[in-house]
Length: 112
Length: 447
Ligand SMILES: Cc1cc2nc3c(=O)[nH]c(=O)nc-3n(C[C@H](O)[C@H](O)[C@H](O)COP(=O)(O)OP(=O)(O)OC[C@H]3O[C@@H](n4cnc5c(N)ncnc54)[C@H](O)[C@@H]3O)c2cc1C
Ligand code: FES
Image (cartoon, rainbow over all chains, first blue to last red; front, side, top):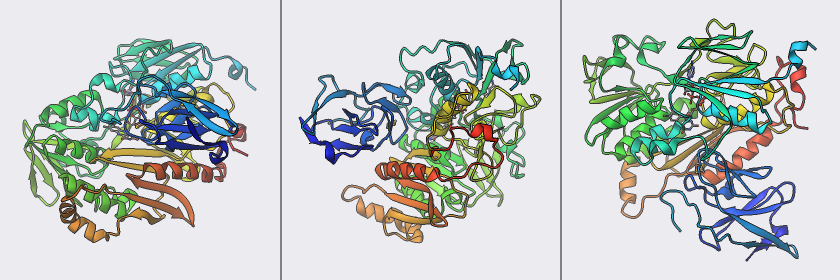
């Protein structure tokens, strides 16, 4: 699935991709790597694309849970469950994502 | 260099097994410490999260197990000593004495004993007349700091009960919001001219007022409570005007005090918290303090300042641990202090530092005048609710000498996220503190 061209997503930027349900977040880190994880925090309804990226981790913009961009694993509370991570490939300067087949871990009260 | 300073740290005792203590243990392992970690906790529980105690846990939406701060199957190799409080610290030998007399000696100490709810008896202003003696024995009189407090309060939040909350700060407002959802008649008595006005200004206060009024919370401002009336069970509170406000239960939400009494004869510098430098070092070697109990040096205020926010308590643990292990601090800008509060279905977020002399600009918000908001806000919402009720939105930016120093948002998580990043970059301009020793400066300032 094509997301956008790499040129459209500057280093340090992230975007929320609504073309799938639940939406995913695609990150271009400062050191040039691209990652895709589910966009919705597992704690409550927050968009991780708004979050704070440091190294290979994103911090939720609401209550600061941290998720590993490579695996989706949660590394700091209050969230308890990780998000799904999706595999990213770069072809001819385009970002492509293959969705994980795992069941998404959505926060209580949120459904898509 | 003294020999003692070169000796490797093989064992570390952390006192206080909550957010900051647990985050310190995690940070120690993450930073490669393989020695012994002993975690002493006054509470019998494994570390748990406090913010839900006034929100989801109080409402019943979350269970106790949901509050755990440890990840599933987390194993940091910690010696847990839970259920006994530290009563004494020997800052030279790094020996902690527990309430049962047991002693733990290690090479270094992390102090993370947090804070507790203030009671009327401890209010310095003399507002305590008649209330202090035995007030905490009154049935129906509550404070909210730990799990037991929340369970006790929740058991009395029954529909129709008249809850009077003394204090219109974050915890008071959050409990009011939750109580109303449970069918409780909640009245907030605040001494401020409007909730949060002193901290954040009129516009924020007006919007918070509107948020609560449309949620069904009653607010009374500018009142002082002088006594909680009993004798066996609360019947109400008395105001300084002599007026009696009836109540079935009362929550005192009038701030907190650091848990530092156990350090009184330790020789550590204590002034409204454990006094630390900018990186968590106390006045004694190999002892750091972090979280709600600690007052770290604030270079802008040019004095030690205690912060009681969740994110700061968690994130500063890694900095304190780096200091303790005498490792170089990573050269990245320090993030602005950050606070969130969830109330009345709204997300309130604040980042930065306010000294009180800033100019506040509303960058996002309804064109409602302050007076209109408080007097007619509720009516306007009723009219609106014919359709769906529009969420309240607000973004206030605070500037000093033209420089953005803080930002507050209500239901603006995306913008707040952007602003926090911007404030972080701005923070790199801060000049180092004059009292800090040059040796501790290494690697601190980003280039
Ligand atoms: C009801 C409530 C709601 C909150 N909501 C928010 C929010 O929405 N957003 C936000 O940013 N912050 C919030 N906070 C604040 C946040 O929870 C605190 O900043 C955080 O808990 C501080 O962590 P800490 O580990 O420093 O201290 P604490 O959590 O207070 O933990 C200190 C621990 O040390 C133990 N202890 C104390 N003395 C001793 C001793 N002598 N020996 C051994 N152990 C001892 C205590 O029993 C306690 O377990 C809230 C706090 C409360 C109470
Ligand atoms: S919503 Fe992400 S941590 Fe709470």
